[in-house]
Image (cartoon, rainbow, N blue to C red; front, side, top):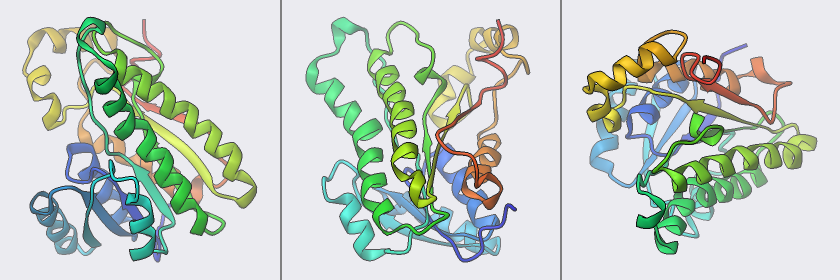
Length: 245
């Protein structure tokens, strides 16, 4: 139910904390993992580590801001059956500090690129294909000073449902995983802040930061045969943040 032997999985933003954990998890389940990112020097150690653990992975360098990124991936790796749209950015500024160019730039990487990859790569997926979007709990709740990111993640959740409806007749499922407060390198400053730890102790059901590897099980579920009748859903990996008040 959770084996991915013979499957090819593409993980975008694979060099980041969440992307690398997702890639390791898919490789452990038997998939050949394409590690996509802009910096081969950051991806190469991950590929070696996966191989050393008995998995299979290769580095794929590219920029998702390129309008032909999906076409190039399809031409070079035409048998991709699992797409994990993990790459993304953030721009924490108030409304007064954001302009159209800044918003467009964030939407391009957080929403347009995942949509376009799904559009292009789904064309060659057979029945049983899987698309998994990494969104955020910010797609469902908001905070001041983070409007562009929140809009982009809310849009990605809507895209998940739209793609699920579009691709369902071909037996391709589309789901999303929404991380909460996970202790990645990008969040290092927040992890070191006692005020944030206190907030999570009071605000989450589990009372702590999540570990990056704790996203892996949710992604693996959506990638595996176990979720064959699940589509258009968003699964929060947030320690109970959305459920707790």
